[in-house]
Length: 240
Image (cartoon, rainbow, N blue to C red):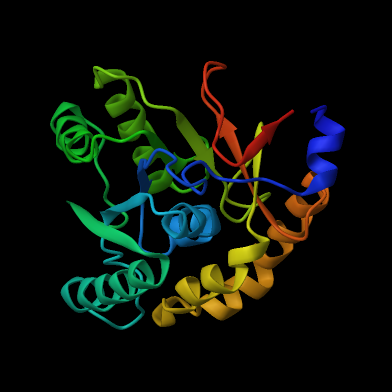
């Protein structure tokens, strides 16, 4: 099928949805609670609905993210919100143990995250775009890339966007996933982050992004990704 016909059809099916299809192990690495939900929550929901195993690794617990709260209290609040969001998405939460606003990029931290990622034996991994303006996002991305390099079986690696044009810069998508069927589920997962005013974040940023990427892909709502290399294709996506 030609690209124009493919995008026009709006049929962006995930593997495993077919009877007897392969079941995949999907991993997403995000810097803070609510980042994975914002950047690729719809895609993760589609994987989960299709019967795949989804794991979200949060680099930090969002310790600096609740005004007037200590790091310990904020971490407890935001961890609980992340767990609630994962339950909605059908994902398993894992916390990597770094600190919001003080994430470290060194050999020890690379080894730590690599161990967490490879323990999931991933078939596909998602993470932040490496030149996001937030340092924690950059570090999450580079640490995930180090896991990619360390893996004996190279998994497909895809970068997602958050707050495009403000935090995510220079992002030129290679692949899109139609999230129209799971848009409400993604919203519910994002709204679970009550301390971050997920509803306001969605209204101001992600709803606009989903609509725009949907127009590019000729569907109602889409998430966009940049694929590392040219040797793989994001399940459920068409490339430019």
